[in-house]
Length: 117
Length: 112
Image 1 (cartoon, chains in turn brown, cyan):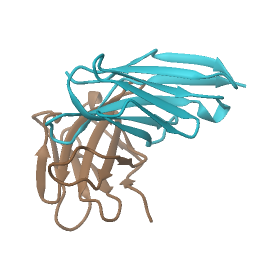
Image 2: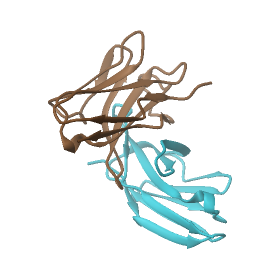
Image 3: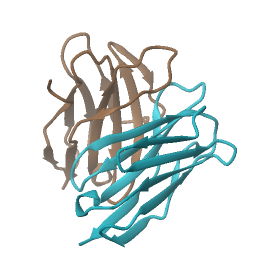
Image 4: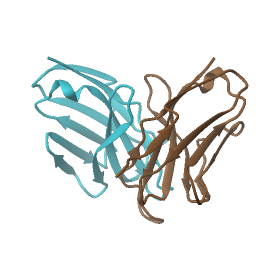
């Protein structure tokens, strides 16, 4: 049973370029979360998605950042016109909990480390 | 902010000793979870304690929850070098959107 798969593991971009991070949740999981982690800090919630729906994007910057979780294929976190401050580790997690229930255990990927030059 | 705050930020102990980490939060919760992160890796779930539970055990881990004080503690007994990692608490706000909010973490170092 494959875990949460993220790619690329490492990504280097120059300022102004676009970064696309992909996440395939665990089999049977329909809930996906994206978190950002700066060095030596905790994880900051960005967005929570279910298939084809954004449930909570309260942690997403209003500009340049977008996320999707299409009916088919992985979830994508897209960062347009990257700046140096976007350099961080971006973690995806998935869960199996359903609507109306509390958040259960999250299964994390190994993260995508973005470096903006 | 609902964010959990871990205390201490860093802890260094000798192998075999017990390690205790604390977490405080601000709002009512459905549950509280503890995760471990090894350097450069993703987070791994350790234990979940529901708001109506006061204590939970899993192997060498013991978690307590005091909802009146909005705090939790994680105890690792008989620590091993392999326990060296960062430990995070995460809370799921009651009535919230099922998202987990993480604290800043405690960096635990076990010295051989």
